[in-house]
Amino acid sequence: MNALAAAGIYVISDLSDPTLAINRDDPSWNTALYARYTGLVDNLSQYNNVIGFFAGNEVSDAVNTTAASAFVKAAVRDTKAYIASKGYRPMGVGYATYDGSIRDQLAQYFNCGPTSDSIDFWGYNVYSWCGASSYTESQYDQRTAFFSNYSVPAFFAEYGCNTVEPRTWTEVAALYGPMMSPVFQGGIVYQYFQSTNNYGLVQVSGNSVTTLVDYSYLSVAMATVSPTSTAASAYTPSLTATTCPSVGPSWSAVASPLPPAPNANLCNCANAAAACVVKPTVSATAYGNIFNYICSQDPSACNGIASNATSGTYGAFGPCPANQQLNYVMNQYYASQSSAASACSFNGNAQVTSAAAPAGTCSQLLNAAGAAGTGSVSAGKATGTAASGSGAAAGSTSPSKGAAAGVSIPSLGFSMMHVGLYVCVAVFTGAGMILL
Image (cartoon, rainbow, N blue to C red; front, side, top):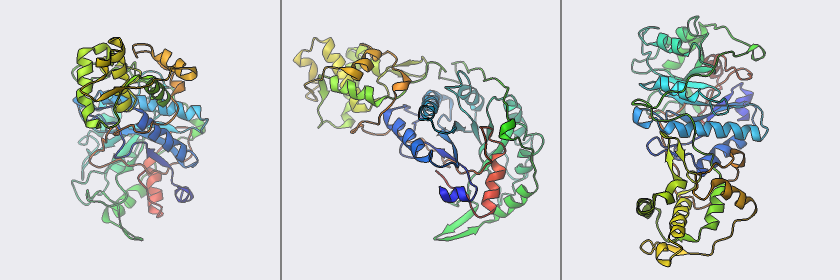
């Protein structure tokens, strides 16, 4: 990171990774993800060239995955709150979206409601300009019109269609020209290093770096533009947040309430207080059948782990690891059956154990969650790390191309002016970009 700083390269880092990310098909914002996100913030906050983070990349990519956006927005909210609580220097938290049928709703959703919940910047992955296209043929004009009143900085988080080769980058003149530069703060070219997807600008072999033909064309294209810029001290946004999209046929997530902040302490406290728990020898693959049995026999026992982005119904223990969730619902069922021995069997998969009486902080947390597990636990108490034995991660939602992350931009506070121009200055001085 210090080498990047020395080369004048600033970084926006993805917070997720291919093995630990919000799963668009089965979304959750949980203690394992919270530990990953906040741990990365801790590690990267020491480097002054890290200016922000993407809380997700193309998580919702179709109408049937829009519910997942509620969990990403909760991640935005909690990461922003964590940065503030630690007293770190300003670092923005944003989102990178795909360019498809729900692009407008996505942009509205992540930028509506309280600023504490919404994104600091908007990354837009756009591949509609291919070859010798035009401002109108590529529909860049429509994107520009839509974002003309957007209240936070917006930029192309990925661009560089390669269906026509070589890429001559005719879109650069439009992106940094008078029609677009007042609205979009540049863009990040996808991608620096060559890989099997053939989007690279350079080929790396050992310690040798060879520029490719796309690099040469991009160098020429960038040298011809001179967009206007705004100093951070003069940046005074006056636009208002967007209106939240309504739940309907093309959108499935309410903007409020959002999923609760993951709280490992709450999860651990509930786990310690459970008198009926799953046996440690039971495989996680068997959990589903037990959950289904309990929730069908006594639905109220599962209210504490509820997770419904369309209705905005969330249990306080939804962010807990699967084994702790199971212990919670087992114990709820066991208690509802007057703690009868037969109510803690589940075909021999459970056992009665000595439970610790909640005291101190645990008592406060569990009282806030309530007997039904549907109460609200203060986000300010969302501390601690994921409990050991938390089971499988939330799953990966990596897009087909991955996410661009390395950028070089001027000091800001937080205006994000003309990102792509500075990216390419760094590239052409040999510093390059990295994926984080």
